[in-house]
Structure formats: structure tokens, C-alpha cells
Length: 162
Image (tube, rainbow, N blue to C red; front, side, top):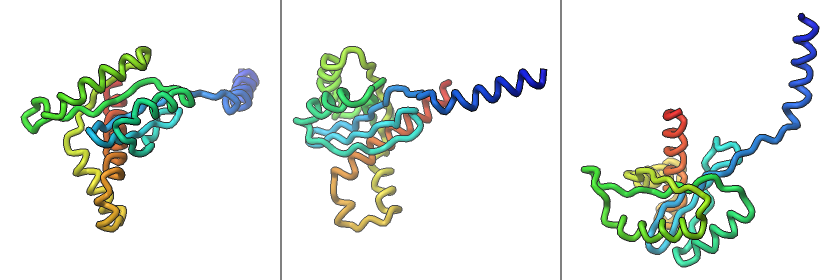
């Protein structure tokens, strides 16, 4: 019995490192009328990384190109809410964006996740990272960090839900 167990363990240690376990990435979108912050997970969906900020008019071309290179499992679009839980005024602009996203990528599900306080958290992160005031005023950095925070929060929520 001990020999059989040892043989099975040896086989696992030889085979497991050669297996390439990979899932599709999750892409988070922090929508803005001018700029859109983007973040994505790694292939194992463990780490959220900022992709950057794209001008709103270029976002669909960017996402098409990204999805051609990477396997995307899901889009997470920030859900702006008021303090009382009602929809923010910017939701009027986000819904047409989501409709177009769905038409362009019908096989990729779209999740919504509460984005309250992400801009404040992103600014706080920039301050803690030691960025100078001039760099903190760069809205594109703020948007990509906000998208990363949305994605990280979504992943934590998903983990607790399981």
C-alpha cells in the first residue's frame, strides 16, 4: 500500500507542473464619458492588474483587439450608486455602453459591481504610493486604478459567494 501511494504521488509531481491550468480573464471596466479605465485578471483569476485607460471612442476597438489576444471569461462593469442605493445619474450613459458591449461580445457575460468610493480609494492609493500632486491629477491613472479596485472587490465577492 505504501509503495502504491508513493508511486501515485510521484506521478502527480511529474504530471502536475506540466499541466497548464488556465481560465479566461475577467476584465473590469470603469466607465466614463471621456475615458474608460480597464483592468484584467491574470489567467488564474487571482490578481487584478490595471490595463490602462482608453478614450471612450476607442474602447470597443481596444476590447476587440484584447479579446483576440486573450481569452476573456467575463466583463465587470462598474455600477454607480448613490449613497441611498439608487442609481447614479451616470447610469443613463452606461446602459447604452453595456448594450453595445453585449452586441459585440454576445458570448461573454457582463456582470455589474458597485463602484461607490472607488475613485476615493484610488486617490488614496495614489497618495499612499507617494505619487506627486501633479501625477495624482492625471485622471487616466485614477480611472485605471478605479477599474483595478472594482475588479479586486468583485473577485473577493465572488470568492466569498462560493
